[in-house]
Length: 152
Image 1 (cartoon, rainbow, N blue to C red):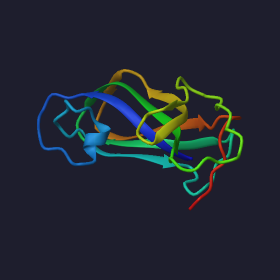
Image 2 (image 1 turned 180 degrees about the horizontal axis):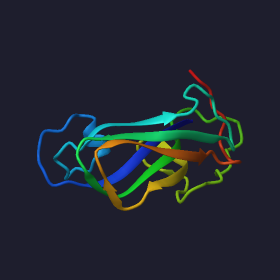
Image 3 (image 1 turned 90 degrees about the horizontal axis):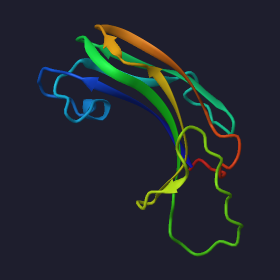
Image 4 (image 1 turned 180 degrees about the vertical axis):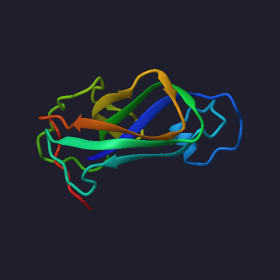
């Protein structure tokens, strides 16, 4: 099982310039200018191993170069598993996980299956002036239904 944090913001921009490789993941595809100089997720305890029911605390840090209008800014904790075809195992199947957030468990057909997603809105519609912003978050792993995992 894996989990990752992701931040998702919708940004409206009007000027055009070349974008860095990283900015393609942070900004919508129609966006051409570079109003964000830096964007990263900073967990409070980056080396911690989490279990069912644990909270993940941290901040999304944005450095804005030029004023930018946003429709919203969210952060999500998404749990997934990689599914491998192989010989049948004699263990009982894992129960369908209890889900938090608005997502449900589903197989995507690409070798990955989503188990849960917890999402938090960090900011609503508005304008961010040039400067550094930190948006704190508190996301939660589901209490039940998670498969066991190992580090390899």
